[in-house]
Length: 113
Image (cartoon, one colour):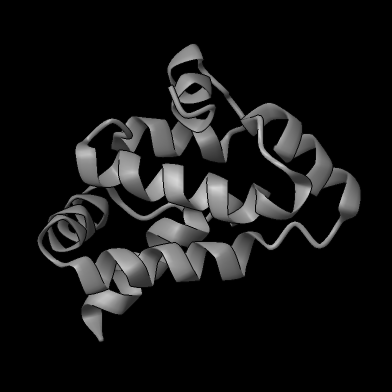
């Protein structure tokens, strides 16, 4: 249960501004790196949270990600999850996302590069 809470904090941090502490973030990253089922859980929770129910937001995300509109939630969450596992997204990046600071590094990650 504790793992699930940490994963949920990471997933929702991207979307809602509820960023975990650095200690919580690092603990959750270790769990996600060590467990494929936890990675899948993070991906599923992210997709559930992001949704892009607003068609314009979904379209804008799709354009930025260079994917079809219908694929935008899965693309953003897959890239986010993979970047967490690989260490490409740091705690500071999570804070930047929360504050809508889209650094060149984050843009590159989310564009799939």
